[in-house]
Image 1 (cartoon, one colour):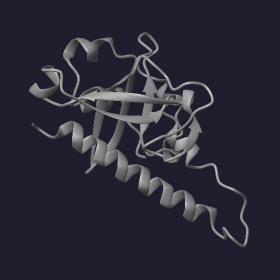
Image 2 (cartoon, helix red, strand yellow):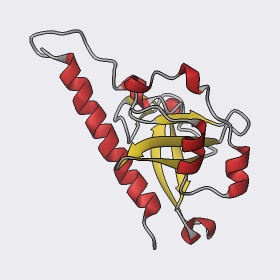
Image 3 (cartoon, one colour):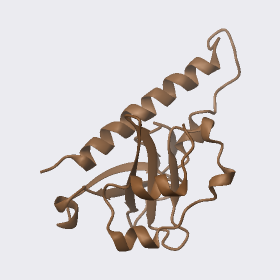
Length: 164
């Protein structure tokens, strides 16, 4: 992923109101290893139910406000993140909803999907078994996972941007 500045991040959001944008806290951008991620995802330090995803789409950064559901899966139940397709304990996957862009979002229309609670999908897809006869090129596996994650994120984003 290409590095982003604070200004690029703030200008990228498509489904957020001005007051929400002003309250948004940013992660420490100097700590991010940009080349090891497909998107920048973080939870708001002041409102933990709010999360944000920003990534490059068509040469432009696009940002989405997402909101975590209030309840979690019961302990002992497994769940899978829709973006990275990593099976995890249910408490580590959260239903997030994103207000649709434009008037539809203002009127309350949302799109939901299950995503890793910590929004750490880029880290999870990089965990691979060691090189072996069955897996001769772990780098190719990571590349395929990254492509799939980006495709699914694009699909979710398209649902948020869709009018009507």
